[in-house]
Image 1 (cartoon, chains in turn cyan, brown):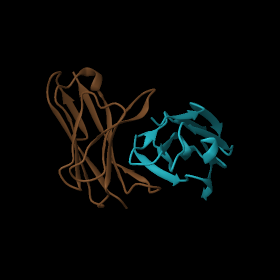
Image 2 (tube, helix red, strand yellow):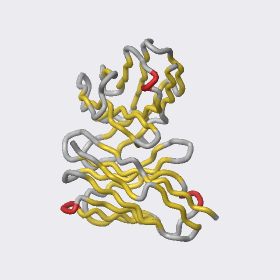
Image 3 (spheres, each protein chain N blue to C red):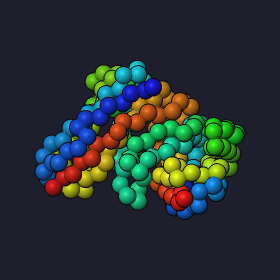
Image 4 (cartoon, rainbow over the protein chains, first blue to last red):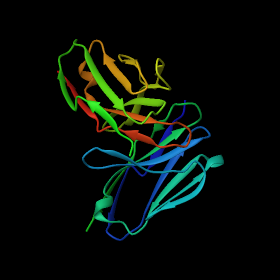
Length: 108
Length: 112
């Protein structure tokens, strides 16, 4: 079945630095989403990007479907960006599988 | 904004007891999901449903049953709870395709 690998497992930045998060998936994805999980545990969708490049605010996601990879770039990081970033992939049908996440800590 | 409500938010159960986790969504989404989250494993899919009356096994269905009696409600049932099922459980709903998933706030379950 579909598998999703994320790297790095954790990342520590100084405020203002950029972050690059990677997601690799095992089958051609028709659905690719990035989520943010707050330190308190709540999960929110950041963006859906099954192919190409998409921007929202300080976030840029690039997905290369044939290479089965997606990246999430966070520019000018802020302390409030700290938390866990999760990649989720679906290869058709209804099943959506998550990676283990990248834990980001942004220090002032 | 899509609303997914889980109950209870916290639950302590005894080994061998029956536990039911409930999820309600008010957005008429076809698809609903149950995940558990453990340190080092991320979110793992237990069961999912693509409409009322349907349930499908996810990646880790053993020890769990699911029920989708209506479009709005999706339950996760632990018939004989074990300590290994201590975890945080998340319910989600979505329209499928490239549409996003909406998550509930999670249920923290401890099985003693």
